[in-house]
Amino acid sequence: MTQRANVLFLMTDQHRVDTLGAYGNRLAATPVLDELSRTGTRFDRWYTPTAICTPARASLLTGQAPFRHKLLANHERNVGYIEDLPAEQFTFPQALRAAGYNCGLIGKWHAGHHRNAADFGFDGPDLPGWHNPVDHPDYLAYLAERDLPPYEISGHIRGSLPNGGPGNLLAARLHQPVEATFEHYLATRAIEQLERYAEAAQDGTPFFLQLNFFGPHLPYILPDTYFDMFDPEQVELPKSIAETFHGKPPVQRNYSTHWAFDTMPIEVTRKLIAVYWGYVALIDAEIGRVMEAMDRLGLTDETAVFFTSDHGEFTGAHRLHDKGPAMYEDIYRTAGLLRVPGQPEGVVRDEFVSLLDCTATILELAGLDPSPAVDSRSLLPLTTGEPAEWQEDIVCEFHGHHFPYAQRMLREERYKLVVNPDSVNELYDLLTDPDELLNVYEHPETAPVRKRMTARLYNLLRDRGDNFHHWMTTMYDIGEVTYDPTLSGLDKDTY
Image (tube, rainbow, N blue to C red; front, side, top):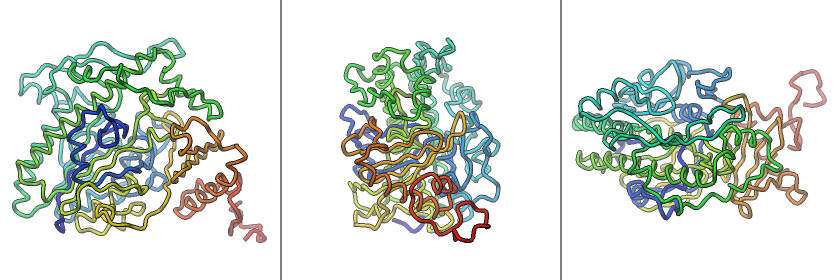
């Protein structure tokens, strides 16, 4: 590894970990990402700090947990939170720029509303929004220059809403060749930026380039080649499709209704999963074009490569689609791959790591101080394949999407605890129930686990300054406290 490595950061949106061959999907068509896993480090317990686009992306930018940076919701469904990071907020691209790096971002931004990627020091076209902006002037110019046909879709797949209206669009056929897809366009623009950065690198200027695909976020809109790549009959449905919502927070059943799951035949769910896998295959192929360009430009041996996603996707699991106020593995555990020049191949780690940890890692690769990324820890020690001291659990959080909805999660080796202040709490034994169908929070035999994990979560939140812990102080058995939980300052006996 060079002292100031180049960095290629590949990111997808709403991407299930089980779509990749490297993570066990025997039918997957992901040879490029599988090769990245084979030649680098695969993290098997990689989690998002929060399963919602803007807060997760803001955490990557800042190295701060969402409760700390306070950008807590996507602006499209914002219910009163801030919509942009403040100007004085530390972000890694600004630090890299100040250190002489070229910094580019091609693709999805969605880390704020009024402030775009250029405001944070990134080169590249401004591509706002939550899904492929197919009416963007730069994309239209790309099509025109190559005499490619415009965006056109048919065969819409959607359910029906309780009010009788059509449900959210989940998938459709795209009447364009692969070369005209937005994914191909993004890869092309990334290659062009790589070529510019490679020329500057010859004079000693390192680069950071982030390629953010908008997919495989729903709706899955693909040309026939990928729409029909996988036979739905070969799709194994997630076991959690048997979800009854018994003993679960009622909001989960409401979200299932919002996404109209029960209004569509199970054959449609199989087709949606098959199309989703096709979307991942398309993105893998486009990443392959970028990796080939890296080889052609002589950059591979001096460029660290990341691959991850902002969060996962339900795609029928728990009778849900998209994401939301349900802290299941489907949307909180994602793929995490990292290849660092000079480090061993084929390393597999099972430590609990986070998208947050990318920030400190990027800074360290650039030879910069990672300490401003206060909730982030460099992953570089794990890429050596050597043992490392690491925390044996991880905290995740959620603040709402269509409405405010506070949640905190503690995930450890066997168990997961989810605290839902307005509803029932959840405890899952992932050894006996990996699909998280049975909430054992109130089961008498799990009382010791519940008490231990509640106290552990409380202490972690308190120590990091997450005020969610104040609710836990009064409502749950977290043991003795050494301060006045009323914050009144009047009852001296509680000190």
